[in-house]
Length: 377
Image (cartoon, rainbow, N blue to C red; front, side, top):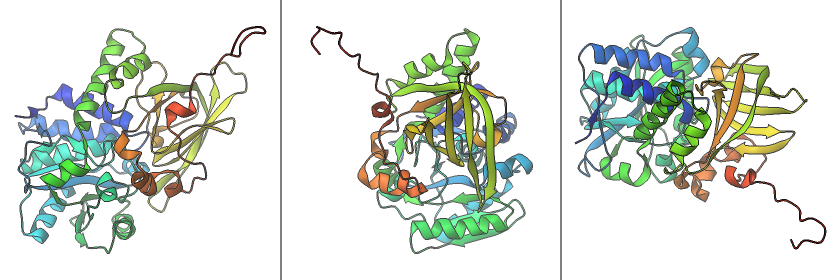
């Protein structure tokens, strides 16, 4: 059962997860290099479905925490990954049966694969966001009643800690403070749960979906096909049903700062036709809202992705720069992330945005043609 990943699988998965990461989750190239090194050393990365574990099997999700801009300046070694797992196992007095992503985005799609190779564990084909979010409490696990702590946190320098917080929001605040003290980047294992709880609260099949999306982009480039049409065709039969191009143009301004452990800012694109039309995206690690002329075209938790206009290659928030030719591509989030309970945790208000959540497919319905004089409406 399950599937062993090849080098090509990992490359496709990294690119597809960067797309689903909606600008965040860290640079997938860094994580991919760490994972490929494990495969070349002869280690195995085995992906299993959510139904392949007994109900009481312990699953320990894993990730890196910190501002994506930090990873550009200070590459992670991956050593703290295994240290975080072992620390939480010791604290719980149990060994993990599997790991899994807490989010499907960029670098953080790769860290569980790295841990799987390091610890000889399978990786569950699911995650707790279906995209990337900047804060630890922004998980479907949390929405549906799973406590995030006890959690472990480790650095590349040998520091290891356990956080036991009164709630998931407090866990985020404490872990963020430790991450900053560890240099702005840390390895974590959180939301310890049994496999039955994974099946109840996780978004299934996201690693497989990321591989499909990455393969779609790779084939589109090989065949000189439209990458955005190809992506929409692939997404149409998944739980991410709706997708569309929102805007295409050139980056004319980037305002990006690392504040309180996050990469915060905004990027402005000018229309490719150079007619004065602009689109602005606000981000906190990930893209949160896209506005064109002040009108919202897409808003969190729906996915707002910035892609190279020619190749479809995802461009993360820390890689945005003046002059890039980008296409802004929106994807609807799965239904489990659109419930009132979910929107309370990671809807617009959770990020201080004043606009209400409206599904991207409703915000971008085709304009109705007015009937000609004498015709019935």
